[in-house]
Length: 101
Image (cartoon, rainbow, N blue to C red; front, top):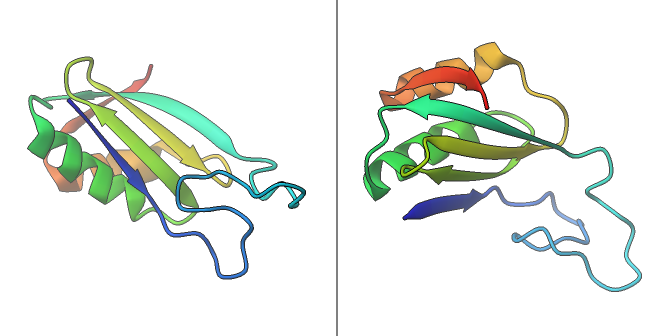
């Protein structure tokens, strides 16, 4: 089971909420960063949703995919996130950030 959360795109963006761009549109994802984290304690879909929701609240995050089975959380963002910001979000959700996977 996995949970993926898309953060709404800015008004006027060529990209949909799934991150796909229209034909011939400017690449709004240029400079995007994808980072995979290991989170301890996720066991189910509810856990995935809680972690995804908290991380989605970090400024610049465009999508989050949490996988309880592997403990991995994949985060796409407009720019690199600080580990402290991700750790705070994971802590708020009630789980433990082990580090980058």
